[in-house]
Image (cartoon, rainbow, N blue to C red; front, side, top):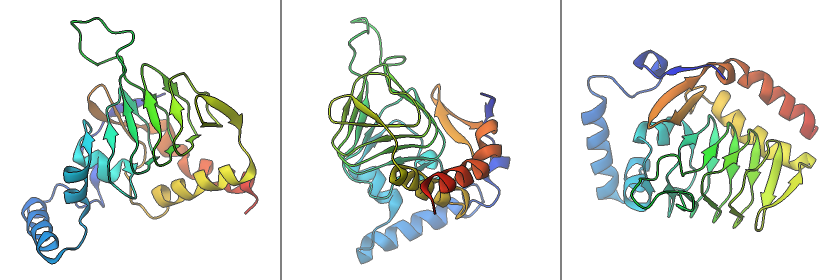
Length: 212
């Protein structure tokens, strides 16, 4: 995997670093709060606990319903999807009593779809293009291109599972809601250049596999 640090140049087309963006976002947020309209920045700050930067939560991962979410990871790959009431974090089983949680948290690959209520815990790896079913409990490594459900139960994809992943990646690649290849690891944001260059071909492959 070829990665490089994320820079402002990667934000072309995303309203994030302009001179007037911060004050405009603040005023818009206040207006939303006064009128009772949902505003993602407010929702994610008030309803979730996350160690990931707000920019990544908005442009690196798809969070459709930001409620009751805990995100504490060593790595989160590109184009992931996180549902409501999901908990991802360390379990400290392999940690020293006097150490922190770095290195003890999950590492998610690219295009991992985590449905509502799932728990992913510990020093584990979730492979690329994986679906974590609703209310699943995951405490062991999961290979890519598979679905995990219940307590660490794993099975191969069926056709409709490819459709789910195609849906997520379509919104990332075609509707340009997410920065291509943006990942979070080592407490910082990076770009997975290989994934960014391949995501359109991966999308076409998923569409072909689901038969649409």
